Image 1 (cartoon, rainbow, N blue to C red):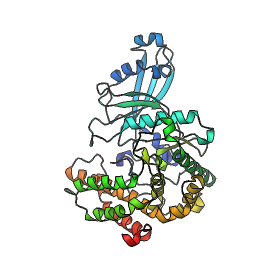
Image 2 (image 1 turned 30 degrees about the horizontal axis):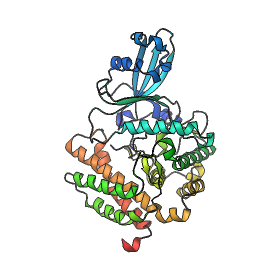
Image 3 (image 1 turned 135 degrees about the vertical axis):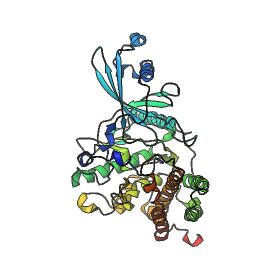
Length: 414
């Protein structure tokens, strides 16, 4: 499915309770579910200057390394949109070992513009540049990226190689295994990093052309309406159109702030240190662009509206005693963001946040409608696709209620 919907793997990939407790499930690997030509990949890696030191080989001898470098691949459980692999590389001469990550496009693309790996690589490189000139408190923690391959003949599709960051990834935003004090600190760090991201001068790190400035929500509503219209030929959902019309009337008047946008900012796209409640890397930049920063805040806030488990891997905080867990309430989360971002006032956020939440849920309604369409056609990519599709009425109801309960300031004109 689309990367912004919070689904994890399929039923035969459920994590053990022990693994889930430690936050290790996000870095668990399996045997390859998507094949890779290891020989071809190894030959390509040996030619890359950016990988030379990581492969423990001398530049003068790079052309004579076939057979001396052994590469083993395992596939991560995450990376549903873009298959993601852990590479274990051993130099058979020195017996040195290193671990890297390979992200590739699927060999069959659902849409020509989907799976924007080149954009991930570009923004990660730009954020490296930002981090080099920033103080420690303003760094955006991201994996280092090394080499991008556009040649489909190497392993069947485009891919890039990046650093492997060992840590904890929590699919459950209640962060099992952390103490109350640690959770409080973890969420403070999440807010700090999100605010830092939204405060970056993207012109200064060569990202002026990374996206259109302004009207981000308005443009995306129109795009999603077009997608839904096509999907409705197979799975008609008139309520989606009704919600889109309400959002469209308010969108031209929303705060429309402009910043770098992660596009899928949520707890399970963060890697935490094994030893402290600190974010050490942000993953999955496929949907990043120049956009409205309140969409990232709303995306993170979706956890307050979702149950901990619905049987299809959706993770949320409904039913969790937030106070006893040390997790901020949604109100506290919004206050914490405003305190760190001088562009946004709490009054403005209070007036418009229901609109942003409804927009994010609307986006996910369209995604689930697409899952339902593929399930009906028998080409869905997950064993739980039918269960996911069955969530659509509930999600539509939630979206409608968000607009009713928290109408934007222009309610009289809607």
